[in-house]
Amino acid sequence: MAVLAEVKETKMKKNVFKTGEGVKISFTGEVEKQNIVKMVENCATGSCDCMSDQTKAKISNMEVTGTDGEVNLDLTGDISKEEIEAALARSKVINDNK
Image (tube, rainbow, N blue to C red; front, side, top):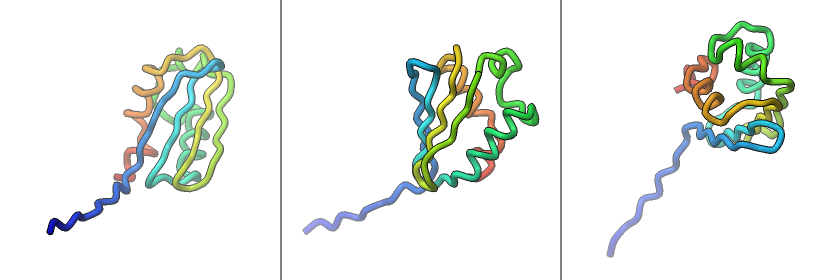
């Protein structure tokens, strides 16, 4: 008789989707809403280097919704999914929590 062990993935997962208004990022797993809010605040005040000034200029609105474990970030503007995926890879706020 085989015994199956269930392994829970607790790391944060990021899924980026292109929307009609811009880009939506869905964070699931080990994610705290306050960390996403901090990331957005850093971006809005220019105290992060995760994306170019040209990309930042394309974003007209950033909205964080959801709760710990399931947080959504909606970005409004003429931005590509690839630009945002690259910015997420460089974000110190969400990548320092590993």
